[in-house]
Length: 317
Image 1 (cartoon, rainbow, N blue to C red):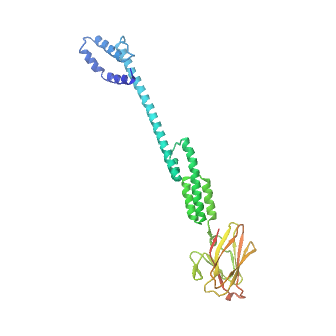
Image 2: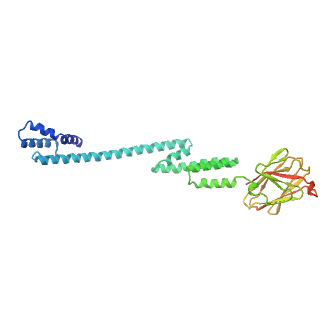
């Protein structure tokens, strides 16, 4: 007899044994006859029950059969649940991989990584996919950051690195890239290398303070008179390039002047600053240099008749 049928019969039989007894009481005259017939009935349904067993022994054997069948059914249900859970997990993992591959195909590596990182127990296939997508995402982000750097959009580049680090917080490549961007980002010369030694009538212009050259307000720099005056700045060997505009200050004496640049005490180059010309833009390579000197001369023998030269938009990299 199958366990399923047996379990159903046992459950019904045990709970209705009283009814069976009443039934037999109505048809047999003695207790012995009732017990004998009950044993015979049980033997028809249970292989473990023999019709020659005592009444008590037959009931005990039938009850034990019932318990065994119930335990087996419980174990089978547990196994079924485990198999079902395993099937569900396998299905879910397959769906995750399909979704990730879909985002990868669209070039959306960030979303693909987000999905993979949300999986607590990754399959070997997921681990391989994670490594592959991570590499592609890093390459994609670095390319975008390099484009922003080439356009000198350093703040945007740093923001992009910070955003990518939320997805890949342990990426050495991204961490290193951020450090390089910060080092390369242009800084105000007046913030980091303001002249420490100046001559007569030196004046700095920062924080919105302005002077005029060729009718335009200028700032982030300084002005100095043209009578053999100079300004010295400490570069500390930390920078590679200095750029600035230099020209005649509006309202100053209409005199031409010469600007001479010295790096670490050695003459680098001179520039003619014409009183009736627009400011000129200058870039000076300063990699490894520790000091820069700006020397201005306009040919006057006394300072009171000298012109004034302005330095503006001074940016150091």
